[in-house]
Image 1 (cartoon, helix red, strand yellow):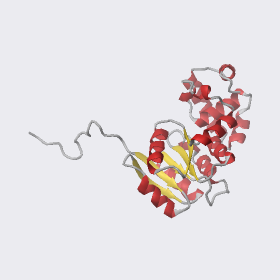
Image 2 (cartoon, rainbow, N blue to C red; image 1 turned 90 degrees about the vertical axis):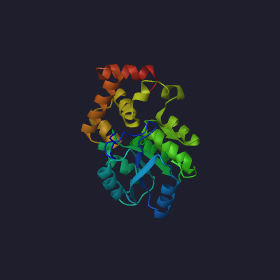
Image 3 (tube, rainbow, N blue to C red; image 1 turned 90 degrees about the horizontal axis):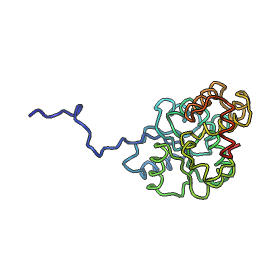
Image 4 (tube, helix red, strand yellow; image 1 turned 45 degrees about the vertical axis):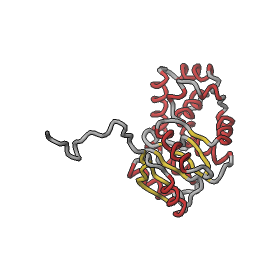
Length: 230
């Protein structure tokens, strides 16, 4: 009987694809410790210590998830938020999870507004951060318990609204664009508010309308008003 070679053999039934991760933090010793703590579901494919390095590495390797410190040297001083905006074209493929010592509301809200899928503090265990990475890779939003309240307050969203199945179809960035468009902002105004290009706004609006099965801004405004999202 022929035996399959290594290139053609089928993967075991219980095989799970490893989540490809880039770690962005300006402390090398922290990056090393974090790599050692992540479990077997995670594959670290890149590291960076500054804003500029992070944008370059993320753009090159296109990871599933970026573990991103909020405060970073380099760039224009925007830290983690600047990294996310610098990788805006990848937001449909790469998800960002902020990992920081800071639990300040302004830090949490800034990176979520930029497009991050979650925010956890560095006090959590390796097992917890591994689980958070996997959840974010699967499309979930993940927050340390105390920090979730900052997001709810900042975005004016009640917990019941977040559980809405239709809202779950939208990314954090799409949800943000949707709210501004529904409030009557022009594409140019949305682009200025979120520090993204007008073309990116157009792409997000098209995605929102498609996912929600709506055909116009008027329908979007009505949809958002019914869910108390304005």
